[in-house]
Amino acid sequence: MARFLRGMLRGLGRRRLGAVVLALLATQLGSLVAPAYACGCGALIPDPARQVGVAREVSVVRWDGDREQIVMRLTVEGDTSSAAWVMPVPSRATVALGDPELFDQLDAASAPVHRARYHFWPQDGDWPLVSGGGTDTVGGPPPGAGPPVDVVGRRRLGPFDVAQLTATDPAALGTWLSGNGFALPPRLSSALAPYVERRWEYVAVRLAPETAGTALRGVLDPLRLSFAADRPVYPMRLSRLAAGPQSLGLYVLAAHRMEPASRIGGSRPRVTFAGRVRATSGPLAELTEGTPFLTAIGQEFPTPSLISGDHVLRRAAEDSSFRQVIYEDRLREVAGVPVWMLTVIGGSGALATTATLLVVRRPRRSRHGGGPVIPPRPRHPPKSA
Image (cartoon, rainbow, N blue to C red; front, side, top):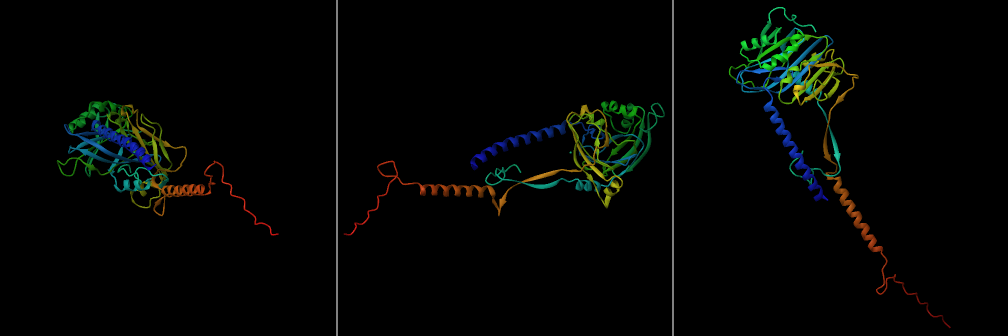
């Protein structure tokens, strides 16, 4: 039986290994074809003839009824020493550096629960089947009023050179970026047109390392934007320019559980955590004041060109809690001995005992016939005279 199970699981292991290899290849190919300026909530534009990519993007949205905060942290990779990043916002924003500890606190608050799940028969990795494997509004000036691009504020924040812009013409915004040393991809101008029509503003961020000439790489300081809004929104429209699949990871802090109003062209949004958070210190305590309900949302966009707009967030029907559970499969044992082995040995012993008893109790047959051996009748001693 062990040989049968080993062969069966070896076949499953090979198929599983093949699937993992294909998935890794697909991930690597997707990262190679994704344009450098594609970013989950804005546009990342490198220096000409250079490359930069967002390896990971984590964002937090805080909504208190009439004002929204977005805190984001980017992990970038590439060979460029500077890049520009553009994010549309529905109204005039205040920009400041965020606290990196916020993301550590959020990760701890929404971490999955690990539970043991026991199995009876050995699986791949359990003795004797050890094979060595297996074990994510109010705005600026109306179109036509004022200059096509107006810089309403500009300052240095850590590694960021932040410029707050208003624009009445997407092409003019591209001209401003080009004049500051960055070439705007042609398709991005048309993607910005809906924001211009809705009189949104823009936060243009120039990312430059502290040491000149050093390539942008690694985890950047978080950036926090705060602006007035009549409903919580997370900008996603510019991600439709990406050539490869995109992923969204979003923390939402509000008075109640929140959810995206629609899929906007992606897969069904999945909730990875939902519940009230009680933080007594650190940046999470500040953000959860008045907005204690945390909803962690993940979504995939296999075909980014189908993204139809920005994520509008709304209150969910119920403030039900949810936490992911990760099961760790373990072989059921008693005193360190697998239960299946005790069962097999005990069952084999019981069968052997039963067979022995049957053999002992089987009636003896005669040598000449097939019938049972009839013992002779006892002779009575003769009676005395």
